[in-house]
Length: 285
Image 1 (cartoon, rainbow, N blue to C red):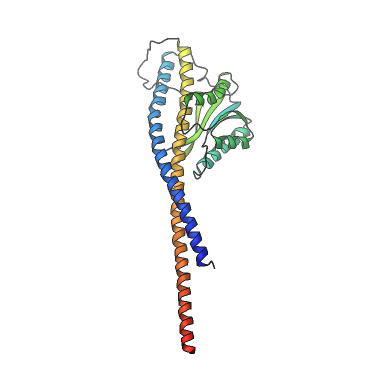
Image 2: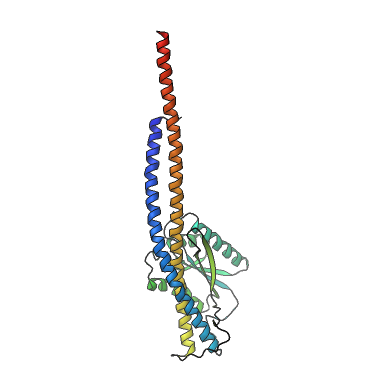
C-alpha cells in the first residue's frame, strides 16, 4: 500500500497534468471556432465554381474536358490530408484505416496507387503503405497558403492531365459538428459536373474559348477542394483535440478524487491506530 506521502505526490503530479490538459482544451476550443468560421466561409465558393463548370460544360457539348473524360482505371492518385500533430484521439487512425482499406481493394484489382501527402502525419502514413509518393508538404493547416497548397497538388494534377493516373481521390476528415468528425474519400477526377438547372440553357459570353476556360476552372476547383480539405481537416483536428483534452481533464479529476479517498482512509486508519495504542498503553498502566 502506498504511503500518504506517495499519494500526496501523485495527487500533486496529476493536478499539474490536469492544468496542462485544461489549458490545451481551451486553446483547441479557440482555434476550432476560428477554423470552423474559415471552413464555412469557403464552402459556398467551391460550390459556386462547380455550378459554373456544370453550366459551361452544358452550354458547350462539343468539347469534353480532359478532366471530365472517363477512361479505364489503371492507376489511382490519392491526396491524403492529415494533421501535423497528435493528441487528437483517433482522428488520423480512422482516416488511415479507411485509406488502407481503399488501397487494398485497388491493389486486389491490380490498380497502382500514387499518393500526395499533406501534413506530417499524412507523410508518415504514406511511407508505410509502400506506394509511390508524388509530392508532400506539411505545416499548411494553421495558416493555409493557397500558393503552397497549389504547389503540392499541381504535381498530381499534372500526372492526371498527362494520363499517368486515371482517377484522383481526396482523403480527409469531414467536419459534421464539434463531436462528430468522419473520414471521407471523395472522387475529384474525372469530374462529374452537371448544370444546376437542367431546364435552362446557359449561354455565356466569355473569353477565351470554352476549352481553355473549362480546363482552368476545373484545375482551380480541384485546388480549391484541396484548400477546403486542409481547412476542414484542421477544424476536425481542433475539435478532436478539444474533446480528447476534456476527457483527459475529467479522468484526471476522477483519479484525484479516488486518490484523496485512499489518502483519507489511510489517514483515518493511522489516527485510529494511534488512539488504540494510547488507550492500550493507558490500560496497561
